[in-house]
Image (tube, rainbow, N blue to C red; front, top):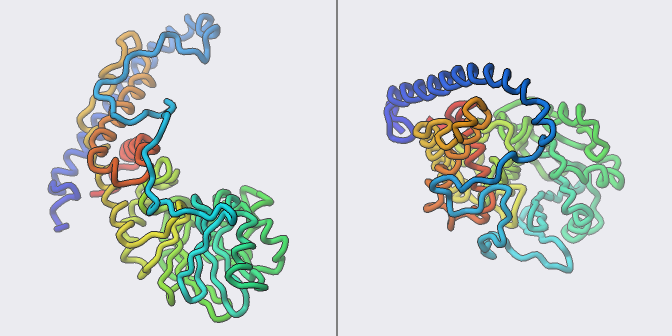
Length: 389
């Protein structure tokens, strides 16, 4: 990209002017709606007794669908069947074992049960475990016995604080009470507040950003790096430089659409930044992404960034071209929540329609979470501002 050209082919001045009009439009609408809200409060007091009798119920029957509804089942409507997922993106798991181990050489392994992923690193002083998903649970110890019979766990690294990735940590600690637990300081803060016995506090922390924290066990060295705010504060990359294996959780979903709403990311602009810089930040060959059934590659990262760029553009276009409340019943003109629900719905539908022709067959489970991605994108654009410029 040149110094004067924006991400979508417009010059920076045009981008700023259009973004300014967008903000002004939202602010003007908000001021007008504030006046309507004041009037509606008077009516609400008079109608309170009547409303109390029907609270929690839709006062009228469901209306017809929005114009130009996407050809994808919308949220909270049951789908009888979703699109198929290829074996490439969902490699089979031996049902007798309930997990699969992939060997990346040099004592580095991935363990997955098909939905979650974790890493094992075998050293001459014991085993390093990265994450402890409850869905894998007791199979973690079975996998260790499979790849390093008789070895003990000497360290557990937390990628971040979320229960679904480290909620089995206390069980591992019961049989390995002397092991170190390693995490970023932001993760320690979150866990201290949570006070969850299933997630013991780390015993080793680091608080640097954009720099490597080296963690050595015997003949194995890992580089831990916090790339800044993303999925959750403290979410780190765990990198094995000798084998060029990177574990970075809840950012990339190899071959799949992301889990709902950018994997429930707490910082969507930060999430964009990590995806944009991932391939230049780490010199990896294999990516253990924390979810789904296979490891990732540079191409998977590029593909997801391409999808996220199109998503950003489609949601921005919808926000700029659709007016709030276009299809709201005029009787509800004093209801700002209804007006903006209509606006958000229409922007989301525009986003889904715009992005589906290119991506519906290129990402596994696209039909499951595409509405959620568009909802999250339009909200981030309105609240955070653009994540791409």
